[in-house]
Image 1 (cartoon, rainbow over the protein chains, first blue to last red):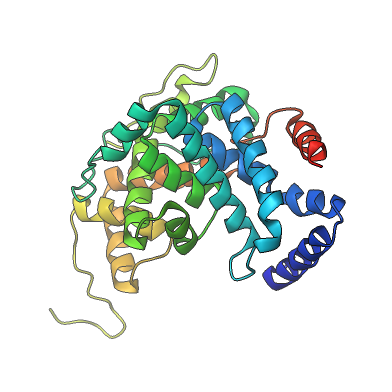
Image 2 (cartoon, helix red, strand yellow):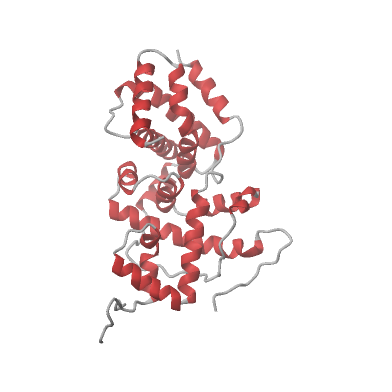
Length: 211
Length: 86
């Protein structure tokens, strides 16, 4: 469905919900369930908490739906609510940890030196059918710092624009670009050697190097 | 340097400069000049080609919907919660 049609369709559903048709909310929400869950888990990191955050966020979205202004995309609005809810929960559960993460001054200006030059050949997408590969990717994403992980999830997992990501996270657009760049290279360093063979059962790690 | 007609003078760049721009290169957010310089570099540098291929694979892997699948029963539990709202 093209963007303008999608938005018109969503606007129609929103009017129905505000007119008292609760069923329309389910229809409105359905395409974004994964998006909400992925946003939540990118902040709180564990599936049980992510599900509770997703539920809270959806309840909030439902009760504030009639004040939703159509200048924003509905999906961005939902992600924003979920992100705020997840942050709130994290702060409540682990205030000290939350502060220390936020206060961490990360040097984003320095150059990134790739650690591993494994020659990672194009991987067939069937690889993701394997649970162990999906888990390895999730684990690698979880190992990133919050600042890098959140940008990566919004940009590369949810495919939000630079502008949308900058609005949701409250950081500048150049900052979104820098963090995304760093996150991708860090992830490559962490994933390349494994994808090269060590995660695939019965296949020894091929030390394929580019030289 | 005397250029033949239609030939581009490509200024060489270092590996560090290439790494700095790899993400923008994948997003097609760089100037055509920079793109040409990077492509000339990738042809000659196996290290940077490996970094480029790996980074591209990372973007493809994490962008695949299967990495973040909602848990079983997620929708059902979500709608149950919603129904409880008066």
